[in-house]
Amino acid sequence: METQVIQVDRWVPDAEEIARAAVLVDAGALVAFPTETVYGIACRVASEPLARLDLVKNREPNKPYTLHIGRKEDLPMYVPNQQVRVRKLVDRAWPGPLTVIFELSEEDLGEQRKRLGREVFENLYRGNTIGVRCPDNAAAAMLLRQVQNPVVAPSANITGRPPAADAEAVLAQLAGQVDAVVDGGPCRYKKSSTVVRAVRRGFEVLREGMYSADDLERISQVRFLFVCTGNTCRSPMAGGIFMKYLAEKIGCKVDEIEKFGYKVGSAGVIETSGFAATKAAAAACSAKGVDIRSHRSRKLTSKLVVESDMIFAMCRAHREHVIALDGRAAGKCVLMAGGLDIPDPIGQPQQVYNECADLIEGSVKERISELLI
Image 1 (cartoon, one colour):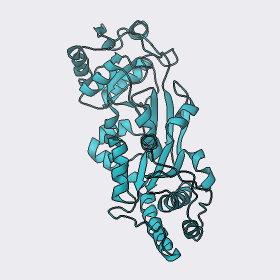
Image 2 (image 1 turned 120 degrees about the vertical axis):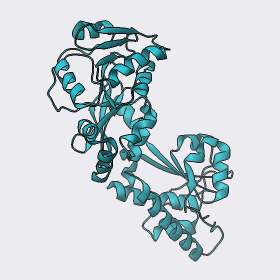
Image 3 (image 1 turned 180 degrees about the vertical axis):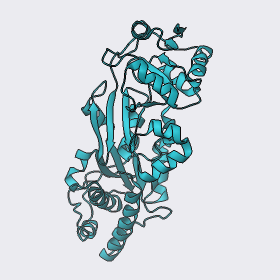
Image 4 (image 1 turned 90 degrees about the vertical axis):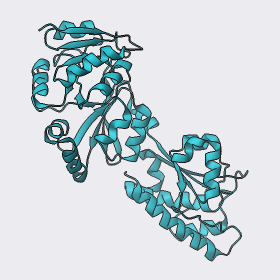
């Protein structure tokens, strides 16, 4: 068999040429293609092509392969529910040199089996996991989007030999073994992707590549922000109570939350800075085992809005203020109490503060229950 070489521009690949390669993959052929790390071998997820791929790579049968997707928005098709930290990680790192191994619940696995069919399901999922990668390469993205079936793509080399970083290296090892090579020039990094496994409290690094463990910790930190008027009553109470229940859900102490990749803060929409929480707010929180005495107020800024992943407003006016600072926040800013405003207790008796704290606590429990940690 002679291996076809399909030449494409590195930056603007020709759609018709890529379509040729996509048709081959859908027909069960093995097609090498460039990513930003090393060249991979695109293989349709079906038993016969995968068996041939095992032979070409001299790889153990039934060893799992990584699913490759052309856009990160396709991830829910294969992993319907993602932990909040891992979701932040893939949102920031994809497309890019990162492979993530996801764990699925039994319920999600059952749904995936029905949706994808037995053959695809059994070849993609091993135990309760699936590995997924979204390459940052124009030719790779175009190819993966045009193929009509799920695709795995291990590195284009024989097991035990160096991965290929250009088409010539692919042909040196696999000429006559793969059906085609999409030659998009040399790979940008010439280094394998980082591999992480999603676990209950975040993720663990299985192989460092372009991303180090420190890089991943930094870009995956999830930031929660609570917003009220002056940042001396409702939002500091909400932030403090939220930290208590978040720590319980994670299984850590309140002062360890940031070590597990979460940061909780609050701000006010009016010009205040450096004021402590009111004594009544502190007392209401203290009764719930929450200490907010070290809190100091700050003004809400567009920078805080942009940096935050989830924003909880105490009332509609606060949400409108958040969105006015950055319109993109509309999708991540919600009312703390669902469809209700939380009334401002400022200047009211302690009992009003206590009732406000009760309302906030009930809302926090609901919001925490919605988070997949």
